[in-house]
Image (cartoon, rainbow, N blue to C red):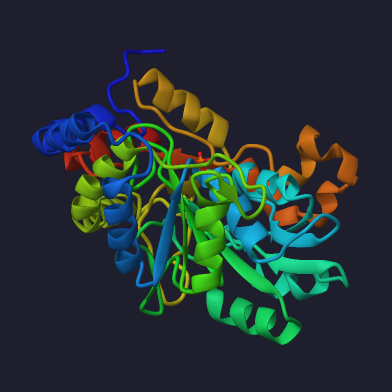
Length: 367
Ligand SMILES: *Cc1c(COP(=O)(O)O)cnc(C)c1O
């Protein structure tokens, strides 16, 4: 591979823009030796709940645990089924299995590559307890019909908002619509920590209280345990870094929207490049900038030779992963996910990226 000139995401460039604030925040935690939970995490929880326009936020160790903690708090148990989507990161379905439930996959829509809400009802059985829509690539699933269906059938909804910090749907924030929502603050996410971190956001005080105990050994006090929980606490340093970065999130998301518009403009004359469509009522935050092309592998190799990093999210749909071989699923039941997996390419997008870099990428693509 040629020298990497344009990465998919550049966290070193981002650090240079906030170094003073971040260094001071980390120093504060170290000086207080407040390494696990503590005041920075509590302050972040309040600030992030308010940002999401929800009542409560409970920090935890990562976005994978957040999904399992939310499902468990909503009463999902062994033997239940939870409906999710064929095109997502395995953390979504892994967490469903982690609480003993069985993931049930539905196909995606061809335009947005998000959960096809019209297919969800047919996947409901007597065992179904919950639905986990995934706001992939930075825009929300079409939530109104999904919430209506869930209400009608008595099902819980957990939004997997790991890629959608700050996105809006008909004016509402990602994370404020389901019974609970989960976020990942993996470093490369739109709001990323300096290590692993995650959170459950909810407006239901009982769910928040259950998650707050479950992430910390079911503790009521230091050695009084109301139930068996787990160790999934957020570090003080992560809370402090996330508070600094939350102040920049809206500006960073706005810059991602500018870059996404620039990509579309520069490839507008080439209809063989099909961008993922913006759903009705959606205000995306472009965690990933995904374009489809029938000669995807050739383009991917060309970018690599030019020193431009691209990604594929995701190359193998979950129903046909070896990890789910025991479910005996057929690729024929997921035609859109199967076909799009061969066509999708994620192009570099991050707030510090320049217009010149976007031009370099589109020039390489259309050469
Ligand atoms: C990143 C991600 C997760 C998991 O988050 P971690 O913090 O890495 O555990 C879950 N779901 C989706 C869609 C993600 O992109």
